[in-house]
Each structure stands twice: as C-alpha cells, then as structure tokens.
Image (cartoon, rainbow over all chains, first blue to last red; front, top):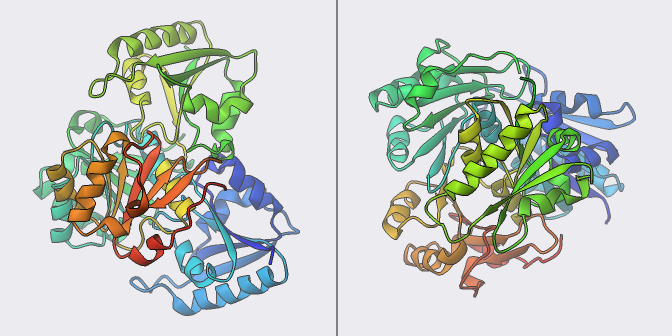
Length: 243
Length: 243
C-alpha cells in the first residue's frame, strides 16, 4: 500500500496564500477531490484552479446545502468509496480544503471514513482567521490574551457565556446569524468593538465596522472579529474592496 | 514613498509550509529583519535560511529573554529606527515572523512603531496551532465547537474559568508552566484528554499524551491541545520524532 490520501489546506482565498508544500503535492497527484455546494461553485477548487492541469482527474463532492446540522452522509460515503478505489489502484489523492483542513473543515467527514485504512497526511493551511486579522491590519491576539473562536449558530446564552471569558473573539459561520450576533453584541456593549471581514485576501474582499454593516445575510466566507478596546480604530476602518 | 514594510508569516517550522506569497516577497526584498533570543538562534530565520541569498541585508533583532512581561522596549525602538532608515531610502523590508505575524507574534511591537508612517502589508502564515492539529492527525475544532486559545502564564483560576466554556482548548506559551498546567488539567479531569506537541512539522518534532510526558520545562515552541472526549486516541498516540 503506497498510495496516500492528502488533506490539502489551500488557504483563505488568494491563490498565492497556498503553501509551497501544498502546491507541490497538488501539482504531483493524479487525482484531486474537492467539495462544492449543490447551488454554486467549489470555493476550494476556485482558489487553486490555475494550478490544476487537464491530465489530473477531478472528483467533485457535491454537498446538499439544505442539511445544516448533519453532514450529507450518503455524499461522503460515496466520495470515500470513489477515493478508496483510486488509492487501491495506487494513485495518490489530494482533497482540497479551503483554509486549514482541521480547523472547522468538512475534510474531517472524509478523513473519518478513510483514516483507518489508508496512509493520510494533513498539510496545514493559512486559516481565514489569520487572513482576516492580516487584512484588518490589527493583531488578532497578543501577550496573554485569551482568544475564543465561536460558531455563530450557537444560542445567545451559549455565546454570551463564552464572550465574557475572552479578550478577543472570532465568530465563524456567520451567514444568516449576522443580525442576531449584531444585536447580541450591541446588548453586551461590544458592537463598536466588532469588525466584519468578508472574503479576506480575495479581490472582492469587504471590510466594515460591524455597526455600519446593513447586510441581513452574510456569505459563508465571512467572519466577525471582536477586539475589546478596539473601538477607535474600528470606527475609522476604511472599507476596502480592493487588495 | 514607495518602500513597503512586510510582516511575513513563515509558518510553523517546515520550510515548505511557507506560503508562495511570503516566499516570493522574501526572495525579492533587499532587507530582511528577524527576531532572535539573546541566548540562541532565530527560529524565524532558521525556517527560511535556505531561501535567503548573500546579497540580502539582514537585521537581527536580539531580544533579551529575561524580560517576560514587558517587551524589550529599547530593542524594538532601535530596530524600528534602523528599519525606518531603509524604508526611507527606498528599500522594502521584510520582517520574518514564525507562524502567523498577528497571532501572538512579536511583530506587533515593530508594527505599532511603524504602521502610522509606512505602507505595511501583513502576509498571514500557517500557525503552529494548525500545524499541531495536523501532526496529531485530529481535527482541532469541528461543527459548533468553541475553541479557546489560552496562554499558559495565566493563573489557575483564570484558566479554569475559560476551560469550562470551551469544547477544545489550545495552550500556548507552555514553557516553564507545563507542570502547573498538567496538575490543573488532572484536577479538572482533563489530563487524559490532553496531547503535547513540540516543534510541529520539524524533523525533531515530539508528540506525547500529556499524561506520559515527564519534562518539567517545555521549549517555547510547544503546545498542549485538549480534546474533550479524546481520551482513547490520545492514550494510543504514537510518539513520533520523525515526519
């Protein structure tokens, strides 16, 4: 058994923010798998599109977007089977993962189906967490700060309990929860300390003081960073659409 | 004013885990600055040593290791002055940062001295947080997990309050606090859920179930990851020195 399964972190969006290692593996493997929603294109694939060559076999993993709480079991079962068949026949397979494979990524659903039987390697990537802080041009966490990463789908009570214990907070999976998170932060006196970042590192990135954002739904690839004590610079954030 | 200051994330240790972008900038700038402790070599520089050419000017920033709470003010003042002079004369300067520049990095001390006067760009990097999860081969955080990053120098009480509110925990800056953190986790019933990772992604990396680690001091580049519910796989962790 020599074929290997790679979980390849391809970074937050800018194709140049892929690592040298992930790029080398990507350009060497025969088979590339990538997730895509059933209502749009694959973000992970779009990041590295320019590096993929026509002789590489691609396996789309089309994930139904209706299923929120449970991963699309059948889809991952079938994808794991197909990936297995390539590994069994001696071809390395790279699964593309936006950001980092093991930081809230969907790669884990394939990994848990394949790791017992195959040699696997995870290539870590630049997370959108770090990319967001870099485009805001402010340190995410410093010295003895406690940083909490909080998924926005949690309830207000759950979120409130965590906020109190943190110096810096990153909300992920913001999506349709944005209005609720905004209200919650306002109630807690933190709205002016919150910055909104969408598609960090991409040409169409958007940056806003959260208080000035009117969107009632945010794209999947957005994040809210709360910098306690950051009111002044956040209020003067330039809204940058371009890099 | 065209010269630019770059905060370059060079990743967790493996020279291939630098991004394509950081490598491109590193190979293009005339001046490279890097931090080093006064009692050893620069980790950031050692990561990218093979990419630096003799015609590039290097600025060591030697940081006294005795100063724990306060950054070495004079050292950063002088380094900022020297970097300014190169920027003023039209040379781009890249400051090497291990991991990510804005994730608990010392780059912020230079950045806060220079950002008002110079064009700055932060190039995010792969953090040792993500690298540690990748070498442990277990997702750091998934679904609606709350992840907290906790600096080990905080007091037991402060740490305990944060642990209760988190599904996954990463302790950073472990160093001489390792015995205390171990005792604290034991008291909270979490010692068997903790994995220790040292120098993730480097040839001399070490991985241990924390319970089996006898070291009474850990190197600066080590991390403890607590996976609530992870007792079984952590106890069977293979201790890997090689990649």
